[in-house]
Structure formats: structure tokens, C-alpha cells
Image 1 (cartoon, helix red, strand yellow):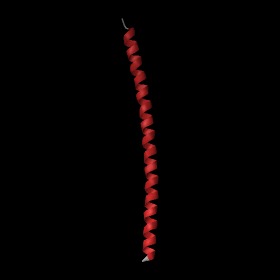
Image 2 (cartoon, rainbow, N blue to C red):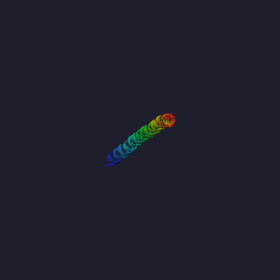
Image 3 (cartoon, rainbow, N blue to C red):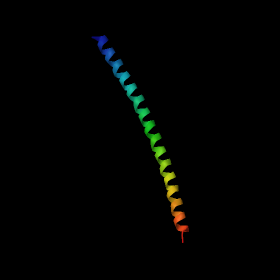
Image 4 (cartoon, rainbow, N blue to C red):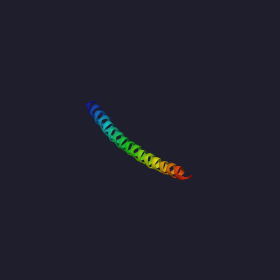
Length: 59
């Protein structure tokens, strides 16, 4: 009975470690995607500013 308890504790510990690694990887990927989206939004804002500047120059 003792061996089963030790094996269960080890398995639960491994699952927690693997779950933690997966959570960190997912979090890092999400943060990277958010950063890229902010870059895209900033670039698109620059495009819209150029459109407005050109429209303002037309008499």
C-alpha cells in the first residue's frame, strides 16, 4: 500500500510540473501575440494618418 501512495504522489507532482510548464508556455505565447497585435494596430494607425493627411491636402 505504501508503494501505491508514493507512486500517486510522484504522478501528481509530475502532472503539476507539466501543467505549470504548459501554463507558462501558453502565457508567453499569448503575451507575444498581444504585443504583435499592438504593433499591427500602431502600423494601421499610421496608415490611417497618412490617408487623412493626403485627404487634407486635396483642395
